[in-house]
Image 1 (cartoon, rainbow, N blue to C red):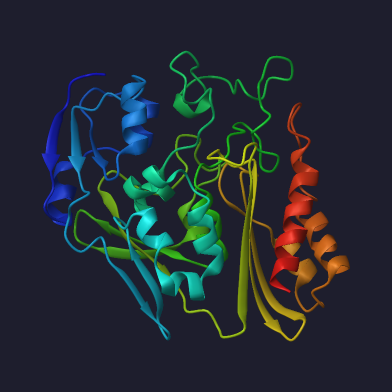
Image 2: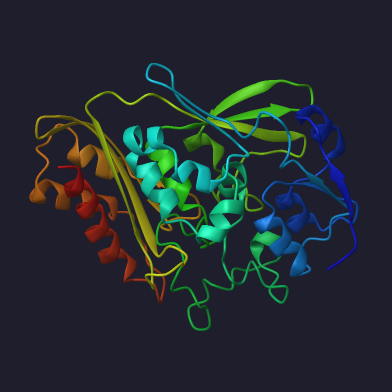
Length: 338
């Protein structure tokens, strides 16, 4: 681990004065004078310990006042500060009552110890967990290299990788919580160095490989996430989240699904269906949504929606199992709502 200085930011304005880079920029450009943010610090320090991130300064934003609040209003919806921990989200009764899929996603994330440390802002902004991307010995596309090692047909270990939108990079996003947030049509509030605030839909917060290989979200160096906002659900909104892992204990997702439906009796009026660990960023399946909307929620229609979601799947050499896994999981999540 390289030496770095530590700065304790006391306000958003102070933090933005000190920062000059994002983790994504550093991993791609490898400059030697970076000042980067740290909140919970789990992802940042992983990179530092591996020698892939060598910041000159780390700016601690964990203790900035006002970023650790949860607010709920039946008309305006839910606001979660970027420094709220996953443990605090998991224990919030209003989130469990009104946003069940988010509650379920948080409770399936990491271990109790990590949930006590991890913040929501850091969770959605973390980088992917591809073992080649995380290896100092593999200079892949995401780090400014000339190849995707996981994609190689003979030597690539890609059993956990993407089956949709898996072009030049086949990694999957690490935040399963983002799957649920996107399904609830959440927005990310971002403040820049001039004090300007913008609210960006989760669908637009994440960046596809085709747009920018170096990053997975739109955050720039002089920007900070201050809160995540979720609209108030209608009284007829129901939701479910299911995560498939290799082991029952803490493990990264093989595939996770968040389904949010507005129902009328046993009919789906509108649907929001998002897949995690299917693509390099959380993936909204318009095909699945269209297949279940205005239909009776039953086994046949749930299966049709699940199969529609996989219509664009292009499995790699070792992850073909994900197609039936997602079909079963999507169908189960829709039927749990019924």
